[in-house]
Length: 119
Image (cartoon, rainbow, N blue to C red; front, side, top):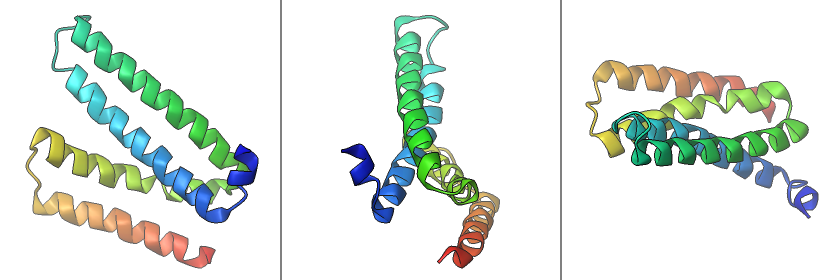
């Protein structure tokens, strides 16, 4: 059933987006856990949640690598940095500077340019 679902290109790209969101969320979950004392119940809870998120990401990524060329898959990983940037601003009220915005724009433009000849 999963093979038939992933036979459609748009479903593969949707799975790539889901995998990238999960990968980026794991960093935020680990940061939240790091705010608690080492080996406290809350620390262990967030560390365990990050492990579950990364396990889901790993399975999704392996499914993607079976269906996408390696270069195509890795070009999309640049979105991870953009999402971590968003999570930092939303969840942790981190200050966004102009240099950070320019850097993120460079990453996104680079991804778009690199992927433009895929079609």
